[in-house]
Image (cartoon, rainbow, N blue to C red; front, side, top):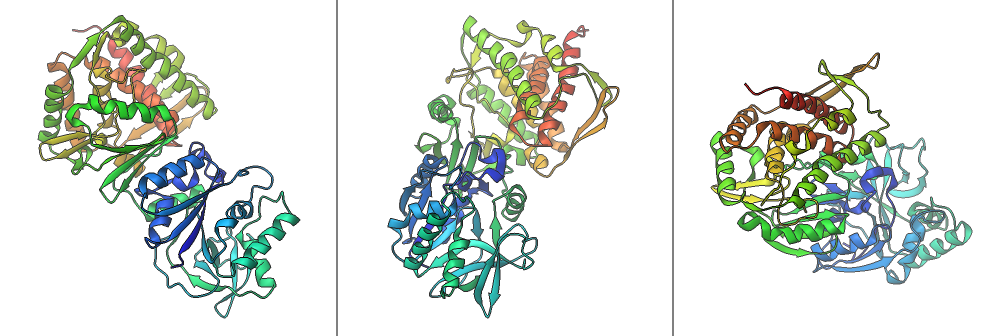
Length: 530
């Protein structure tokens, strides 16, 4: 392959909406890795990379330096990556001084999985695929590129992939300069316009075919790409965070919020021997050693689940201290946080807080329900060592060995511990909402009617083993003198809190499923104990 590769990551990727609100498009997860990893890893070890950075460029720099320290990568800052004139051509021109030699242009939202034989000279990669009306396309004559059509052309069989080898680099950069001088504010200028100019002046571009091309530039193509590269870990997207797994050797965790990274790293020592080995960290990423074993969500034996509860209770869940200050923190965590999350969900989805009939049960407004929860029932003085996201997917089992992953960064600012009830409730939640089944859309939410009261039905498929695990957990809670009613109520609040962090329709399901169970939990608290 050519020894120098230009990867353009400076754009905002706004066609991906919230997914790129907190990160760069090249860092969007496909399977186990971000898109840019599939590009870096397809080229030889001695390849030189020039990476344009702009929008969340520091995240791109951090990631590539962290994961590929042995690769030769030069970064080129693009100062103008949004608004008039922020075109692909402008970004490429910023790297001009580093590319005074033949090079390959590889745009960051294009993944090619199959190998192809590189030919000499100038060439473009073309993909024969259906539904190319949303792409620029190639008009091909005798194996050579005749012209690149704009989107919507009648010739829609050969998509322009965005991977181009430029042998005649001096001519390429001359055309780049002319285009920018002629139309400096044109945001649509791309490599296609440069190539067409070169073609008109007699330059030749050969066609190289790619059979397995994935595009991540929009929601539909991203969904198709993730289906083509599945992830056995069933990771659900969340705004502002991602997790990447590399060759089952190490794990990279990303957070947009730098304080999350700082606190996650600080909290490792409080996980005792259950935590993984930290390898490295930056402002937005930390890396830890991949833990061999299987997620607890993949086990079906009740004895394994009992082993988890017994071991964690005996070796981890122990009190730290008691204080009035912690009472205030649990109030903030359970009441204030849930109110804010509910308001965020309603606002983001343009939904009114109103009475609703859910699964045949009349459920009052959230604002009314939250006020019916006794503060002294939910809040506590006791702080414990805790995980903070104690779901089955974050518990790794290897024989008798138990390890934790993806722990919470703090509990209202406390990094040493939190409320043990939050761990119990998170575990309880994961026995109903299973990521594997949710990723396969084994849940439903239906609006039956809107008048006189909004009527909704929510359902979720559960694994039979998790129904049995739930019985074991509830028995464990009662036997160890914890309050099962409190666990069930917190579980409902967890679902409401999760709603604004996910995408439609799962977010709507979580919210109304949470309201439904919150109403049931409040009724159970009010009911006299016989």
